[in-house]
Length: 338
Image 1 (cartoon, rainbow, N blue to C red):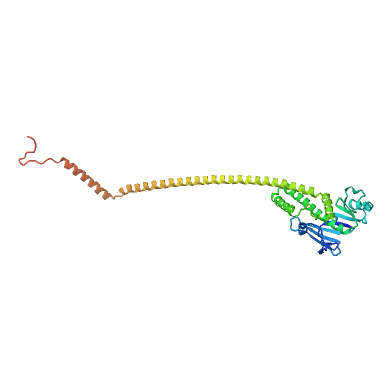
Image 2 (cartoon, one colour):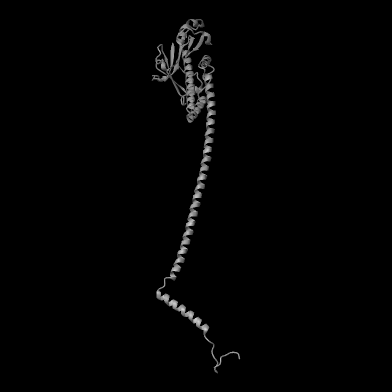
């Protein structure tokens, strides 16, 4: 049996709840189950899997159980089951075919294989794995674990690439939004152990797949990148705050200078107005004085001649009074000393 995992590239007629061996999927932990949806076609040969529902990084994968893969452009994983009739001794005879499936050559060995339980061996290589056992239903469960591992890889690598682009293109706001979304994803959706511990073989299979897909290393790199991004964003914010503070100070200084200039103009305008008022008052005073003087000269010739005559008579009368002789006595003698 062979299985191929694709990114969602076309519609799949998967409308019923996925069941394996007539049982619903129940070996993932509760947080994983609560944000996942597993659907299957009626014949069980196609699966529609959704992970991290409700997050910014929701993943949709398609699994097809067939012997003729199509659309390699969207192929992200493969898996094969090799029936060893519940006898590990038969694995070596099946290794050549498994190697051709995974590597397209016969160079694969059991050096990296992992015995999950008695007579059950998992060998991960390249973009998939080979499972040697007599249990095809368990193979399907491991394929589902592989799909989750691939979904994790898709999210982590996409986030790392997007973060790098944001930094290189100085898209600070976009980098900040991405940073926050990744933190939420790591807190709510990324689990080192998403398989229930009591499911011993599946738990062991997940450990193999986790190591094969380098999930811990990738997540550490992403975490380190996030730390660097946080430091960068913090530096950018400090720089922005400093620039805003400098702009504020510059604006306030400019406003003060503008206010001083405005006040100087107002003072100059007021001084000019005061000079104008003083000038007008002076002109008015001169005008009134001139009018008073002019009124003296607004006499008719007759009035002027009469006034002059009166002045002359007044002057002559005064002079006459000064020159008149004293009166004489009755005997004809003047009064005086003898």
